[in-house]
Length: 112
Length: 114
Image (cartoon, rainbow over all chains, first blue to last red):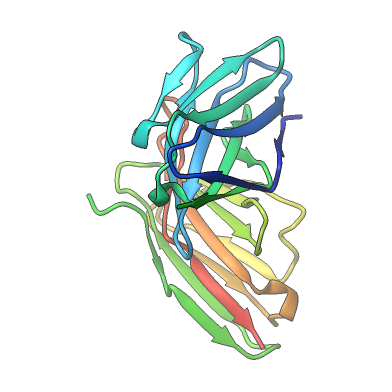
């Protein structure tokens, strides 16, 4: 069965600092992995996804993530945080049946 | 296309009442998913449809919950005899059967049970 663990329920960074949000997955098959962002009282918006091919994937708003099979990780990074990046971030893995299994989420705060 | 839409966005009800939520997926998507999200948690899978067929239901979906997608287009999620523990955001998402399987989410329906 697939599962996702996000390390750190809250991450706080200063504006302009590096953002690093951690995600580890468990999957018995080659995984499809996703990062979504959620702003207060809104649905989830796709940031980026990994399916096959290049292990470094780029997404919207300057975010990127690297798939590391040996570490079963898919960490999300952004070189320079902006105030507008403050939100909840969810990592997810796709099951063979097609649904997504989500992690618990990481709340990102950005300090001026 | 306007994306996934959900109605109502907010619902306040008293314990014991029935509530129904509606989801209109992206028109060309044949898969539709329902998730529940409580404060500080990730979305939890409830059920999903491919066209009009309900293919999977989570154990979270008690007998008081029922979902339908009668014509393979919009879907409804009904909760009977609501309990305070049902208070949550109910998210609908749709996807295409082919492709990489990313889900497109609506803005959710927030339920508060008093």
